[in-house]
Length: 267
Image (cartoon, rainbow, N blue to C red; front, side, top):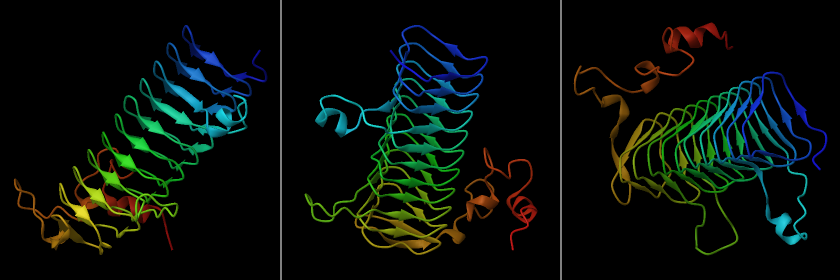
């Protein structure tokens, strides 16, 4: 019998939902059919959990300890939208306004900031750190120990790796700095540092560190330009740094980047 549940007001829980021990559900949460919410899960107010999701999924100690679940808290912030089939393991801490596509998987010890989206069938392999306003499209593979800073954009089928001499025990993660853009079907080898405001072209394989403002293309990836020279094919205007030309879903959506940034009074 599950114990110590805290369920807020206005919560809707559909049929065949399983709730474990020490589950906390904020106000106005909607949990659709056939979800499993395991022990020690916290779901923030206003969140929507789609059908067939599993939150607080078992880790290896469950299988090694006579199928007894250890204490592995999962915290999901307010106003999350988890679409059907999403699986999130315990020992994760996820900020507000988090979204997933269908059947996304997030493994243990993932730290995720606010306003992050993880696309359909994308896979975060755990022990990762993801900043705020990171956008991840479908079919992305985020290897263990990857760090994605704020405002990083990943397009479909980006693959991060972490094993320099496979198979080996010494995994080495990649770091992607703020405002970098990694486009479709890119592969990134272990231990790479991709500086901010860089652009990785579709299909590239990144084998070396990437400098700020660089455009990388080819296999192996090489510098093929400077983002500041790229122009919009329709208007002829410069496109990068992209924060000055793109604002949908971002904090400066109602004004512009400079106005928003200056309003922060950062010294």
